[in-house]
Structure formats: structure tokens, C-alpha cells
Length: 463
Image (cartoon, rainbow, N blue to C red):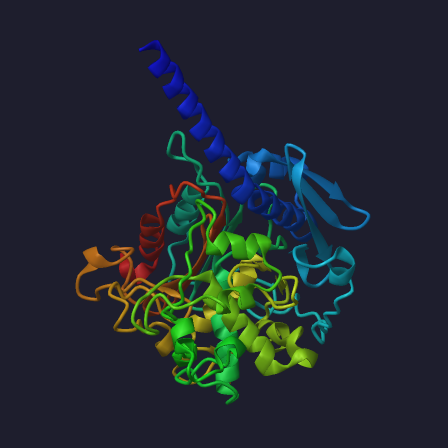
């Protein structure tokens, strides 16, 4: 019996060591790389302090495993876990931070991105094109109630939970009626949108459709699928937009997966995804995938051409709607990471939401094609939950049954951009509302349904 116990213990220890070794081998490079990228952004893009990082993002497991070094001379961040798996991210003005992978640092730094600045500063102009906000509030809002709702969003009501709201903006009928920030953040702080980048990528595809360069019903122009005998050749641009490409891609951030490998280890994220095989016939199964969004981003690059690509997000979208404090970040191949790497001020995110709330029209100019927003908020028949359109999440799972909506106390026509850790732009056309909420909520403790419902109740005609 004693021998059996000893051998059992040895087996358990051996299996534990194998698991730890496997976890370290597969996950540590991804964790270290993620941390290098995140610290680089928080330091050089958001201008945050080390203390803010150490009590925020870097305090959470597994990110807390890594140690980081900030080099302000060459604008870089190097991380490692227990002195191993060193990863480095560099900052480049105008395009933010890039994790070095599959390329030398010299090659990466030699890449050229020519992005012209806005023709003139419009910060002093009235909202929404500029940042001058009127003192007189909209008569359609109960301002006292609204302030209470926003204040509550910055509290921590649940013991052991961390909502950590960092910014809230409420736009009603085109007017900015509420704005608040946590200590250390303000209207000039560029904050990660994470997967809200997908919605912006969808909008950029829309600008090319409007110009006649792309057709969402046609096979997606992806070089890896150009052979008509390739079953992936039938994947349409619309399939990519609606996350029904059928590609065998696992989006799971709790372990090593296609998504974590793509972001943490791949030089060319779109090519990595495009080389995946099919798991389902295109158009038949909804499978949320950051890989699809990065393929879309590379399609933008290929369609626009190398000469104009770097500036295209700014000139075709950002500058047109006053998003002068927004930047997209590229991977090491030079393609903007359309799935995840967008940085903007809360006001710029609100401007993007306002564009969609106004059916793709900005100050009389149609930025997105006629009917594009309607297509965006229409889920394909194959999406059984009816919760996703053109790179946007939808609330209208069931227009007639509120209990089957994602947010049951919010109108069915609400659609939203959603990003990791609680980043969101909520658009409610029927209420003329755009709400931005940014934070570091890793435990999903923020009650979005109650938050939005309470804001709606501050509209005078709703009480």
C-alpha cells in the first residue's frame, strides 16, 4: 500500500510538471508579448504612470507574472517572465505600438507610414466636429438624474469585484450631455478600444463599397483563396463582415488558441488566418473571429494600395468626422490590426457612434453607403441568436420578446461596439442616444443593462 501511495504521488507530481511545462511553453510567450504591447501603449500612447499600470492592468493574473522595463530613449518596453521569454514592443509616432515578432527590430523601425495631419486644428470648434461643448444642456434630459446615473457607474458596489470604469460619455440628440473620467484619465487620454476596432474596420470597408471598389456579395479578394477550386473561394466579403466565413478559427483568450497565437506570435495576422482551412460551409455558421476582421483589414490595404494605405483610415473616416485623436496600430507586416488595436479618446469613440446613429451621414456628407447601417444591423438567417451584423453586436435577438435580448431593458434597435475588459459604444437610434463606457472590467461585474436603462429613463419623454 505504501508503494502504491508513493507511486501515485510521483505520478501526480509528474503530471503536474508536464502541465506546468506545457503551459509555460505555450502561454508564457503570449502573456509576455501581450504585456509588452499593453505597457507600451499605456506608457507612450495614453501617457499613464507606472503606478497606474502596477495597480491596474499589470496587477491581474496572468499578466502579473511578467516584469517590464520601459526604455524612454528608444521608446520601447521589454518584458519577461522569471527572466525568460523576453518580448519587446516599440512605439512609433502616429501609429502607436507594435510587438516585434517574425521580423528584426531594425526592419520594423525602417517601415514608413506617411499619415498627413489634419489640415487645421478644429479642437476649438463646437462639438461634435471640435471639442467646444455648449454650457446650455439639452432640455430633453433630466440633468440631475443623468449625473446620478453616471456617478454610479464609477462606484464599486460589489465586494470582491472590480468594475473600474474609466470614462463615460452620453450624447443625446447630437449633443454631449454627460462626460466623466476616473482619476488619471481625461478627455485627451487615448484608450484602447480592443475589439471595437472591428466595427471601425467594418466602417472602412463601407467607405470602399461606397466608392465602388468592393461588393459585399462577391467572393472576398483574398490571395490565398483565389483558386476557384479552393472551397474557401466562395467566402464572400459579407461572410467575413458577419463572422460566418466558416474558417476553422478558435477565439479563446483563456488559453493558447488561434486568437492568442495570432496576436502574440504572428508577423502577418491576416495571412495566418487566411491559411486556415474550413470548418463549415461559408455562410452557414456564426463563429466570432478576430481573424476574419484582420483579413478584412488586409483587404482594405490591398484595395487602397500601398501608397495611400497608411493614411486611409484617417483621410477616409477619422478626419471626416472629427476623430483627430485616434490611431490604428499595425502588425509587423504593416497591416492595421483591424480586430483589436485601436486607440482613441472617449470623445472620438462617441463621434464614431454618432456617425452610425445618423445613418452614416456626417454634417450633410454621406460617409457610408446608402443602406449600409441597415445592413450592419441585420443579422444573417444563419445566425440563430440574431446578435451580430457587419462587425457590430446587435441587441435585437427578438424584437417582440425583451427577455430574449442581450439587454432586455434596452430597445431592440440598440447595436454596439464591444471590446475586451468593458469597452463599449452603445448606439440607440430610437432614443437618439450614443453612450460610451470605457474601463478595466475583467470580471463582467458592470451591469450594462441597468446602466443603459437608467440613462434612457433620464430622457424627459421617457418618464
